[in-house]
Image (cartoon, rainbow, N blue to C red; front, side):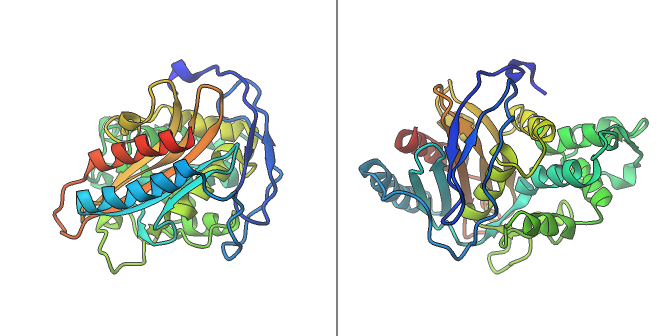
Length: 319
């Protein structure tokens, strides 16, 4: 964990997960992720429980359409100020390749379902060079001694280490365990079917390994400020996400410097470039953000500028 985020002011938040979901008061005690929620899983078929869009939100939606056209991309957005319910959406219910956005969900499944006595994270996992896949900056350095489950969670989230993610999936019983976890918290959209790095192939026709902006935003909300995890596990997961190292040219480049950010990035073929998480304004208002993008060509480069510009627009509309 990045110790710069070790102690944070208490914050009070009301968040809306969807129509039929209760408003929940979040009163952390000290740590970044301590929160409690009375909300249960919403029905995806229910109407959205948010106030009519303000002028700022309507203007943001208009500008998102323009950004999508300017960048030659497909742009999916779900963003909500969890205090006010103000929401900005663009293609929020369309499927996009998930890529590495699954990694915090896998870590949450480890925390909730396997670390009930607080001992599983300390378990040392052995692996060999044949287990290493592309982009394994942390696991590649520790083949000789192995890594603990907690260290693998940290590597998968903070550095998007793909071998670490695969080893976590192995402990869970395979990629479909992530799908089952999502269903257990009311997410009927998000699904994981393959391992790293095959899951990043991102073909436009593929349903496997996809999510939607609305679905992943709501799932992250449950994990970071909801009651899906115990307070200690919520604290731990959010600490890993606060210390993320991969969004410097994406969300972090577009959000105000004085906002805290617990997030995860992802990328793949067809210019797929994703960023999702929860940000906190200086007055502690939590804002959930999910921005997912693709481009038509299989070899298209990821467009970090599009993510950053979208984040800046959303901060202006919702902050």
